[in-house]
Amino acid sequence: MPLPRAKLDEMLDGLEAALPKMLIDYPDDDLFWPYFSGHAGVIEGSASAEDDAHVRARLAGMLQRIGKVRPEDSGRRGAGHG
Image 1 (cartoon, rainbow, N blue to C red):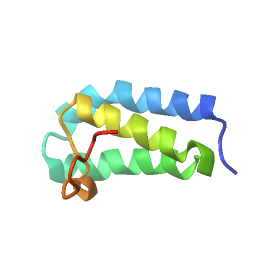
Image 2: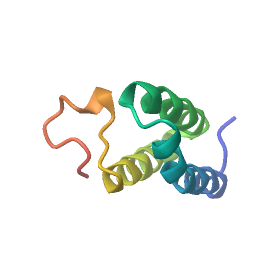
Image 3: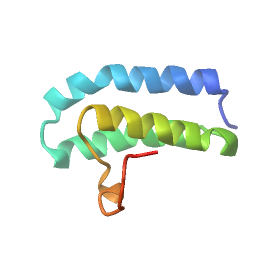
Image 4: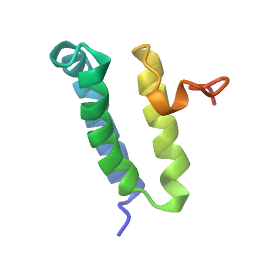
């Protein structure tokens, strides 16, 4: 059952707050991406179809702010924008 947007935002806020520590604990992309993707995947999997774009935009925004692009998005032209 999908979670309400307020709960999704709470989870996204927690993930974003954890990013500075993640970058220290998992400095190499080979370590960072599995850890981040595991947490992001839980949130994405909890979103309704209506909230999917919102969750993806929030995730993309937080990654953009720390200078990261998801490996699956790195080949897309303009990845991380929009």
